[in-house]
Length: 124
Image (cartoon, rainbow, N blue to C red; front, side, top):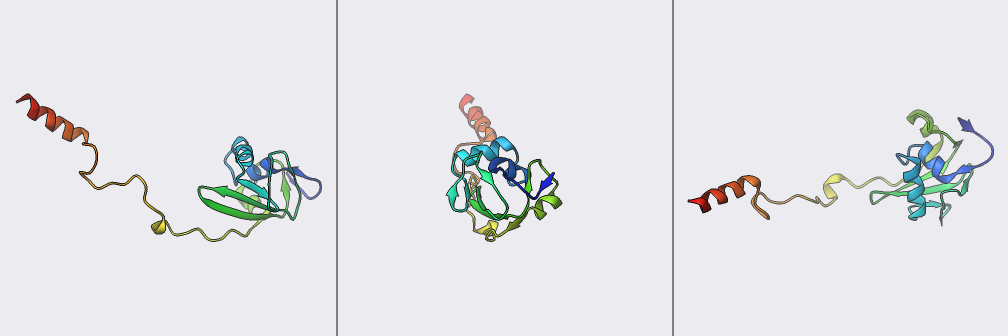
């Protein structure tokens, strides 16, 4: 359902063009201040029209898109690409991002196997 006239809700459009997985997540992102329209913080029900610039912050990365066409219902990836112009800066390479949750083997708490060995030594 592609429209050329009128307006559509920001959260609905963000969900429709696949910038958010669900409409409720898109609305939550709006309420949290992660969505801006033309440089201003957007509420979920704010009206959106063709030519508006939408900024969506996801996972520490900002997507900058310009609305080309309005859609009310979720569309396929090919149609979604026609509904926006992506002006996002390129993402940094994964190698430059800090690796979280990795630790050296043997550092930190003992593994289950280590605990069993310690229990076996204590019983002797």
